[in-house]
Length: 94
Image (cartoon, rainbow, N blue to C red):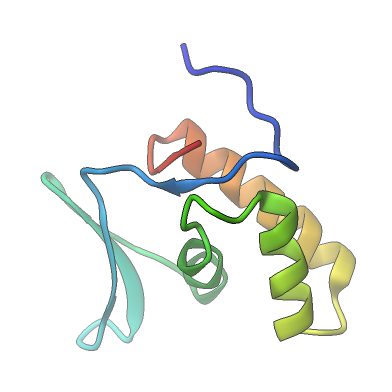
């Protein structure tokens, strides 16, 4: 069982067996892993770009709110939900 998730202070980073990159043929960010790939929507790509293990989730939220002004509450909720889901799926480590 994974340790409890503290969304505000966690500093998520990509799990080591995943590769995150832009795929021109897909016109999307993707996650590559030994069994295949996951095509990400634009929001997920923007979040994962910022999951460097140095920034906390609250820092990532603030950065996204600055980059995409106007939907601050939606960005905050969506970012936290995505990070929690990606962590539960094993895409991210804390």
